[in-house]
Image (cartoon, rainbow, N blue to C red; front, side, top):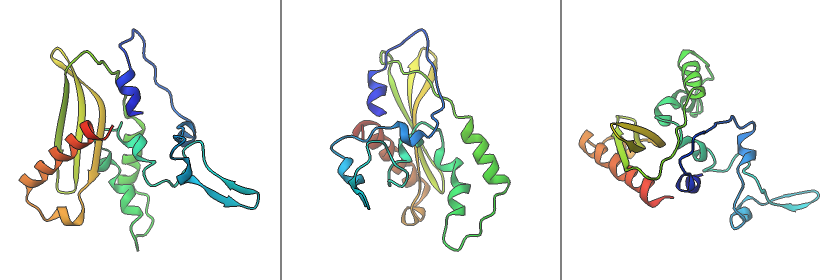
Length: 173
């Protein structure tokens, strides 16, 4: 998907669509298909489309949702060891928020901006394209702060956020 952002051209129309069974819509690169091999009664097979359960599969979609780490935190709290399943107000609010996430058009002719931020439990970055006085979000990235990173002072968390944003936006393509 990141490659598509660089190929996108300004157009008079842009549409969005909801991917039913979204994982099944994303092709697995042929050189990586060997990592999806499984054995069953009928032989050995590999996936040509992204299956559920791949470690980095969710990040394919997370990077297009602003503040994903913050918004989805109530879901992760449910998956912790010895955590009781309790779908409450916070989980429902997070679910409703994730359903409303927008997508903006890419414009490769305008300047690129990377903004970063850090909180006590998450780092975030947004890639923006500048259009006059307006800035349009193109891609979002966020992650939780690890237990080790949690003890560092606020200024270092901000620097860690900048580093994470730069690596995400300029190195990981």
